[in-house]
Amino acid sequence: MALVISDTAYAGTFASYFWLPATFGMDTIQKGAVYVQDGIKKSHTIGRIDFANPLQPRTATPTSSGTYTIDGRSLTPLDVMVYTEFNPRDFEQHWLAEQLSPTLLARELPVTAENYMLQMGLNRALEFIETGIWMGSTTYTAAAGSTGNGQLKFFDGFLKKMVNDSSIYQVPSPLPLSAAASSGSVYNIVDAMNALLNLAATNNKALLSRPTRYERMKFFMSINSEQIYQTFITTSLTFKGVNTTERGINKFKGYEIVPLAGMADDTILFCEGLMDTSSNLYVGMNSVSDDQLQLQRLQANSELFFLKGLMKYDVQYGFPKQIFLFTTLTASSFNA
Image 1 (spheres, one colour):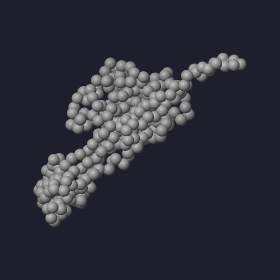
Image 2: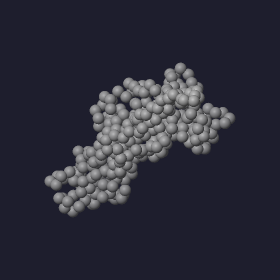
Image 3: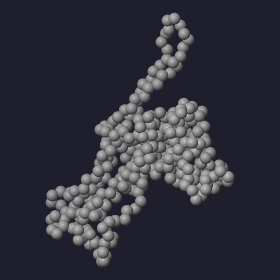
Image 4: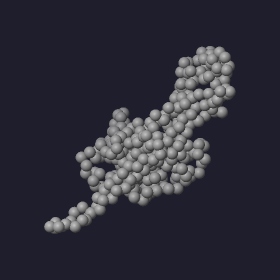
């Protein structure tokens, strides 16, 4: 069972609420970095279409030329479950014992505890889903459901798919990010973002020629990496930097910088990440309503109760050649 009550002094008065630790939830979805495709029962395919070599010399009777290519990329969400059992009678040693039902056969969770346990259970589950969106891997060596990487072993995240995709443009010879000048041991964060912009300009100028490029193209990085950038613009830029008493500006050359709780450190992604179907980043799930947890008695003849949640997730990107990546991660990072 998974209910540990360490505060059993049962003296004095008790607040009608609990303090909850800070949690970050589904940061990627909340910040509009991806399009959410729900309603997927098994698999969902998004079609792609392109046309090559469209032009030819004018002739009175032309011959066919040019080639249409139609294919697709699929989202196949995989199962994830939240499940734990506990005995409400454990609260008999706690202040909340006064909220327990008078009779033993009808003993359920105290109302205050039930509300906060549901909330905290969901908050912690969504933290690992958020990290899994980027760092998930079904080939981690840890057992699925165990601590550490075992909590990220239910589906492959964006970064695993990207580092294994040779079609994606990656900055060569990456090093840990720093606010200091690039050297043999660190890579200045601004140099890294400039390298990503150069990759985009060289390999897919259409993305940077659009009038809406500053709204569509974004830099995605970890919370730690964003702090490195803030350090750079407040301390490294002697005359044009941001005042250290002011709020930092999360932009670089007009492009938004989006810090994400689930993103890996020493990693920057530059691509189109939006809330609508034109996004190049998709998260697929069975239903957005699957964030409702079930709490009830285990069975009629048992004192135990259970908390259960069922979810399905997958991630996918549309066009690899419209993604530009700086990362120290390698394929082996997702097999550890």
